[in-house]
Length: 91
Image (cartoon, rainbow, N blue to C red; front, side):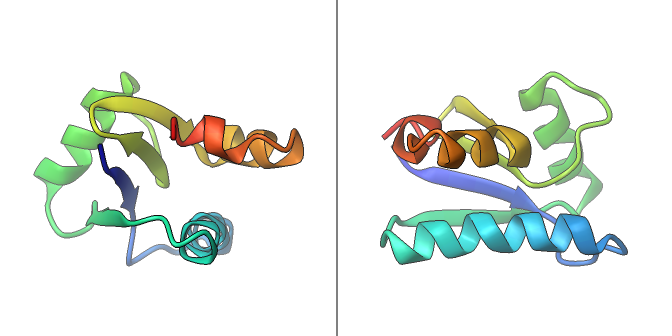
């Protein structure tokens, strides 16, 4: 399985940029391989993300391990606070 992070390369929200950065930094620091899908590259990518999440207004970042939905930034943050980030990524 591989980690996929849906993100936005063009965001007017500093909060979204910060959240994405924290997830990327965590994955990089643990040397966990992942791929990124930029929802601003195509409306199809954004719609795919929202369909997979099951929320028509979901915002990035959204994380998947293969076909399994891991969660959004808040779930990632909560897992890190609980000392269980690997559980979040379903590793």
